[in-house]
Length: 105
Image 1 (cartoon, helix red, strand yellow):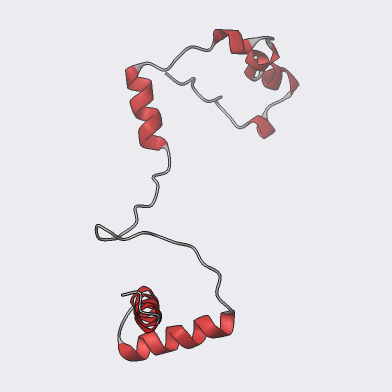
Image 2 (cartoon, rainbow, N blue to C red):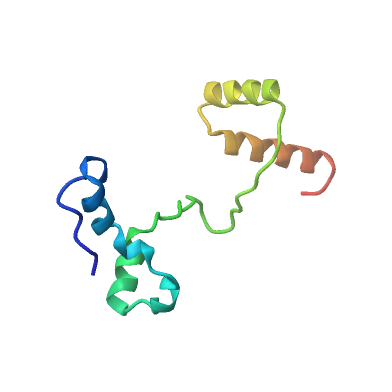
């Protein structure tokens, strides 16, 4: 499937060796020689691609991105650590408390 590497690195080749090793790159319209991947090539391609991180979460949870002041975040992280809970759990408890105070729960 892939071409063999040159016998020695490009930077160690003389002018003639370098010209011979790179002759394939002198061709024009090489894109015309491209074709769809075979199933075997597709499998190799898919296995070599970086995997997306899977979020850990229970059903009914949603990942959100919010901006919080650095000092407030540091204080809340310290409190969460002191309470022995995660940052996410502390934030969820805070939101529930605000919603309860507003009569939304």
